[in-house]
Image (tube, rainbow, N blue to C red; front, side, top):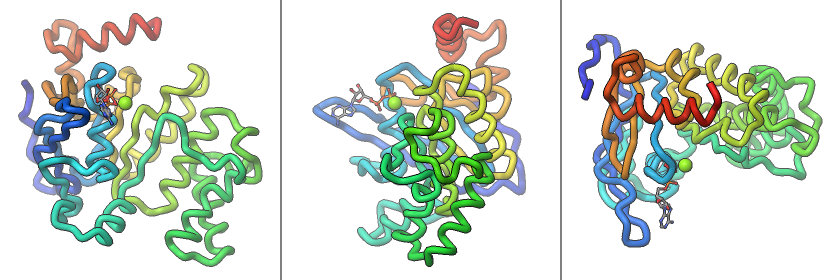
Length: 259
Ligand SMILES: Nc1ncnc2c1ncn2[C@@H]1O[C@H](COP(=O)(O)OP(=O)(O)O)[C@@H](O)[C@H]1O
Ligand SMILES: [Mg+2]
């Protein structure tokens, strides 16, 4: 396993996940999972279906409370928080799902503005101004007045990213953000994610887009049976002569994806 990372004296841990465990339906889904994200870091989590990736993201977000273990965001322990503080903690984490989770009866602009109005208590005009600036950031200003049914899958996912960004999250957790998209729409969403990373957003992304991931992440995490079994630089895990499970898994993915 490749654990050694160059020590960067300026690095600052933003997220620390400590030995998270979760049992669901009598089955251990997460088994003492630990990881850290430095400020501005972009890490990629991969692994076979059913290995616990989505459960891990939801436990980090405390959407599903872990049985044991802790999550520290900016040094603050979620385990020790009151119910009210957990709500605030959760607002600092932007979640992006495979299926967009947009309100079908609201326009793109309203989908972004509604949380600003309800959660942040912003005035209507301020909320719309902010919504339009986030839609501009994901390249969708001209689609602001369209409803989800009038948007492509890639555009819907970009609206959901704009909505998350509008909440000023400290980090973003992305769970297979391009898995529901037709192949020709994947690139536009990956471009937005790349732009976010380049602008300094801290992100943990579950993805099967290894071609993309290997260029933009400094560390890949490979999960199997509820545990992170391999972690390291993509060039190491995916080297031609690599004997890592990550490599074997990536070859299987390339066969399925046809390249
Ligand atoms: N609420 C639940 N009750 C029982 N088992 C669950 C529940 N949620 C998920 N699981 C099981 O947990 C395992 C991991 O699921 P998941 O985190 O969705 O994996 P992944 O995202 O890696 O595909 C799977 O075997 C799944 O069936
Ligand atoms: Mg999943």
